[in-house]
Length: 279
Image 1 (cartoon, rainbow, N blue to C red):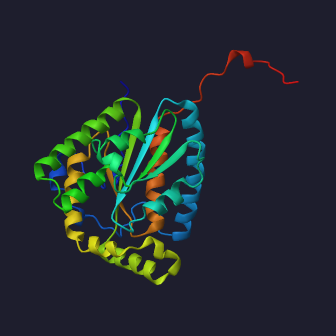
Image 2: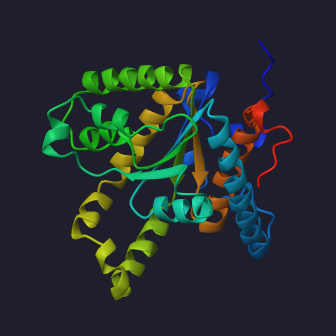
Image 3: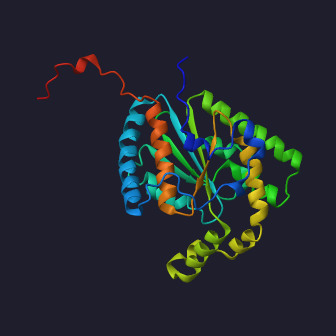
């Protein structure tokens, strides 16, 4: 088996893993940090655009190769930038090969099955990239914060999810999980922007304020799931996301680096095409 290249030291600083995972705390990670930034916002924006174009080329090769599937999970509190990430990072890619699902509360039909049933149906096929805006991790956030399930049931779900993601990984799915980390104050500003701008009122709900009052409980639930479900085959990366440009730059860089490590290739040409002349 070929030896894997070690991950970037800068990236591991933002991944709860290994012997330090038990001591992992979101409060120790600055949501205003910009570890991937050049220090120049316009230069960073140009880098995001260049990466978006490169991802389009890599997606074309990924689709032709068809040895892998890619699942990108975007998790975060309200206003953390999940929609903005989809637009900023994947806007240049073809809708034929990159798909997005925005997960909401389960329907009656979905509730009649196990909580991973609807997730499995939406996973990428060979050569496809799928971006989850929220994900199956909602099932170890909302029910936990609202105490709809017990600690024992929560631990059971962590095991379910780890087994589920191991199945995916062992059958060709590359899993990238990003937790978009913003501050309490940054969320307040973004919610206020939605209130102040009539064109953004559709994004705002008074329920957002109820959830905001549970901020501390959600941070605690996030810490628990990050500790319990960041695995070798599906690690979590915490993205400091107070800066929208940095958020996109970091995620685009990680996706690009992951795809390049796959050593993608076009399939062999049909021998019948050699010296073929179209008349």
